[in-house]
Length: 516
Ligand code: ADP
Ligand code: MG
Image 1 (tube, rainbow, N blue to C red):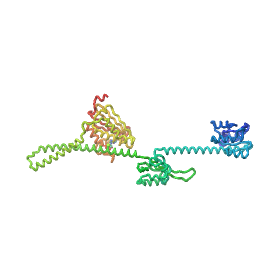
Image 2: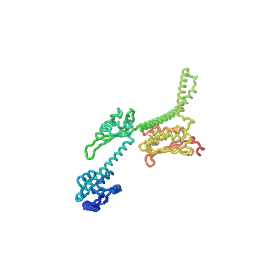
Image 3: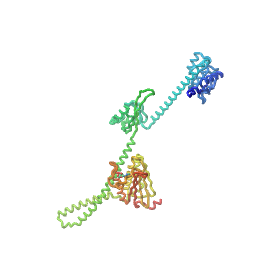
Image 4: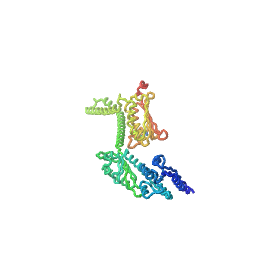
């Protein structure tokens, strides 16, 4: 049977024998062999040979030593092993040994002693010592692993880029890392007398009370919250707290002890970026509104201007002589008021009219717009790339086009904010015209809405949209003598939107520049 086979299979045993009689050594080997060991033995008789045997590559399971050899013996061997910190079962097998020497040898580190005339005691002693040695090695291994684990833990804990602490369930610090001590401005050793809750802004201290209670009662494993923390010097910073419950139990014991792990991150930079982004968005919306208001005023002024001119002419042609004095007076007042209306419409028109002379090249305009949106794009995992063909940096167009490109890139971004994606901006000169395309891989525009999107106030963005962007955009482009085309798909390989703007040749400076 296989179990019988296992029991009888000889076990390897590497034995170092300190014995001057070869005969005795062979006898011992035979005895071990008969007792189920496959012996691999080396016999030595000098201190030098022992030193050599212990420093070589070989490992030993057992040392069997005669008590006294000429000039060398178990005592000296034990001393050498002790010096070298070698832990191998050591059994004295001797012809004679008196009680006192035996006790001394045991004190010096021998594990047992057996008389040559009573070899029947040897095997159980070896079995026992091999077993104990294995236990000792196992413990050493565990201790080393534990030590390593501890080193790794403390390195991770102390070098972490975020603040970390263990506290008791009522918040008292038990363990604090370097980063947290820096964040709070209190040396690590002084933190241990303090409570984490004392660092939370008083007005926010009870905000997470319920979550914390659930955590401590074991009804949840963790939670996150954003709180303002106070440094030792009274300054305040926003922090993200990640709080979790730790249960400690020792092996074989039911009793568990709990503590709380806090991870504290300084989020001032993130908060500042968020603020900046929302301010930027507000500014963009405002400029879109302003441009829209301008266009609306412009349309109105145009509409009013025509009847106004007609009225002015009528007043001029009126035969004032035929009127009463009072009538003439009233007509004069009416003419003055009409004049004022005319002045208002004219100044509105000139307000919206482009500033002559001041132009910018398309590359500069587009680069500015890309920079404006860069951080928002990065934040939403949107990749922006731009390509400018030769001569684009030598063009000269109305800076009002900045609003056009900002609207288009803004729309492209907003179509991908939840999904991420790619925005591609291309500008090149073709047949003397400048052609700018802005394309995205966003959700696209439904076929039914392809025309509606250009109507003022049409938006699918609720509170966040004005619905004026495309209306203003087309208005400005057409005012510059250009055209705008829009194509879009809501599904499939080419999902996304592409807007192409063609601007008149007037802004393209030819041809010397193009040759360059
Ligand atoms: P707003 O952006 O304020 O909604 P716009 O006039 O700029 O106003 O756009 C009108 C609507 O057209 C948007 O609400 C959106 O539904 C759609 N739209 C515009 N550009 C895109 C685009 N690149 N991708 C998907 N939808 C777009
Ligand atoms: Mg828009």
